Image 1 (cartoon, rainbow, N blue to C red):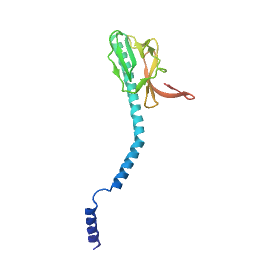
Image 2 (image 1 turned 120 degrees about the vertical axis):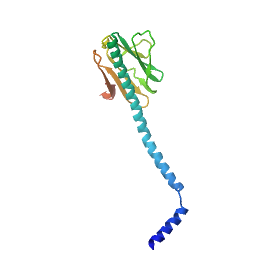
Image 3 (image 1 turned 180 degrees about the vertical axis):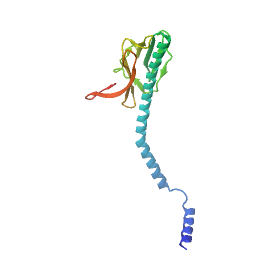
Image 4 (image 1 turned 45 degrees about the vertical axis):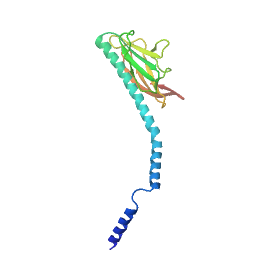
Length: 182
């Protein structure tokens, strides 16, 4: 008997009140908005840091490619990197007089000119490293440091030995309040 009564009441109420009320929808939308506002900055920071790390890996890979080409073709190669507008671009060339086939990063990544220690081309925001015919560095060792405009992160590619060993680094605290990429 009770079951029939509950069933009738439920079916009757179901016909009358189908769907959600405006108040319920507003509450759900408010909760979604709050969760989005909390998650968006973290996601943006994660995405920008990933782009910076990807650019670092691409530059290190290009330097290693230049070393490989120098060894296999038994001739010097030059790795060149520059700030070109809002992007960082780099390339490898055997002859500095031939135009370079450039590869580039995403926007909002720049070269930190204070911490980049590759040799610099006069009057340009362009740096280079010469790899001789066995893939070793000719002249100055150094690093190229990349920074993002969106987050306070740094990534660097360091040419650490004359034999041509490259390694990746990131922003580290050096002294009180000072940071460096190593």
